[in-house]
Image (cartoon, rainbow, N blue to C red; front, side):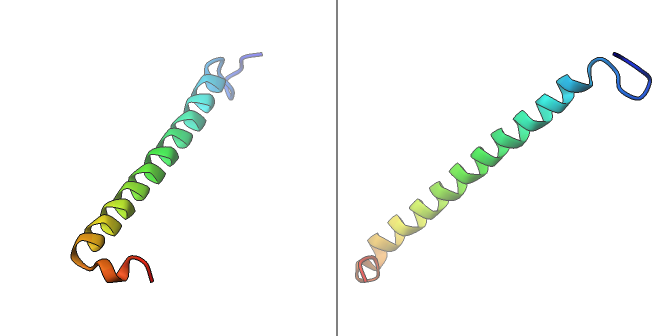
Length: 53
């Protein structure tokens, strides 16, 4: 039932907003995991005694 307060395309933009939130959350988690892995790897090369402690 379209009206002035709720147009017919409102559910589309709601679903796209949820999709964008999930996608950017996953990208952020992957980026953080990759940065942590690079840091641990770099520390393993420079200070191997600190890796397994």
